[in-house]
Amino acid sequence: MDKKAAKLEYKASRRPMGVFLIRNLVNDKVFVGSTMNLDAMFNRIRFQLFAGAHPIKDLENDWKQFGAGKFEFEVLEEVFPREDPNYDYAADLETLEDLWLEKLEPYGDTGYNERKKTREERLRMIAENRKL
Image (cartoon, rainbow, N blue to C red; front, side, top):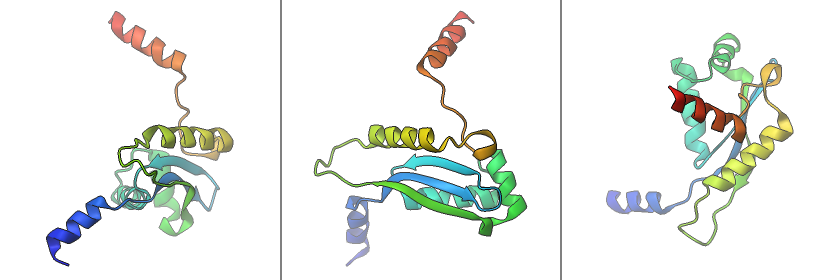
């Protein structure tokens, strides 16, 4: 197979997508997220943590303190492709992530996630910004 054909085949193939968890094995804190490409997300997060550029500083600080060997990356729930090639998986992933966040409650001392704002909180923020 030539290089051009290999690129086309790669672009046409589906990546594993779903909801994932990063577990700190020392203090059992977890982070829950979702993505359209699990492998790429795990690589991205590892790179950010090793580079000291991860947006969640508590997770990054624990990574530095305890080391990469004290963290596990897990797939909580995989989303499988549908027959419709134009199907948008974003809403499914968001819903599944919300369900896992509700189940695990990875906030504060038990996790690295921040609580999502409610619809009312988001609307209030929008209204306050419009006053300015």
